[in-house]
Length: 105
Image (cartoon, rainbow, N blue to C red; front, side, top):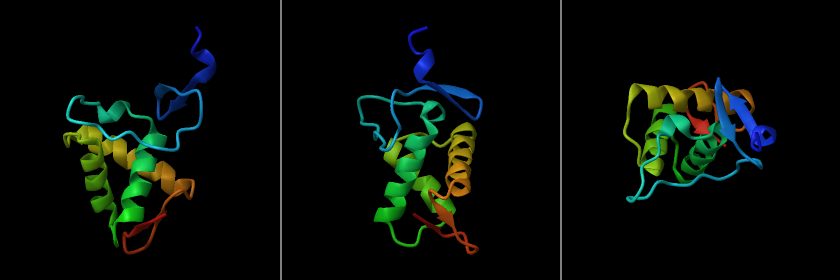
């Protein structure tokens, strides 16, 4: 398979990425993307954007902003996916979560 060398697995899902994902692509009105199929690094990039442009965002506010940035419908599966992606970002120190639930980059 020609994509085997660029397939990455995150949280039990396979993603094709030929380079590191550092940005996110907001969804426009012409297309809908299933947020549960978006690469975790793209979710983290959107979270970083929300944190860097917002003031004093709590974790729940960051999740809401990610839904807004992607124009996605809020579902349990989508919320769970975003939370898992944020957990990765916190574990890897790509985002910081304070004891009072504030997120910083």
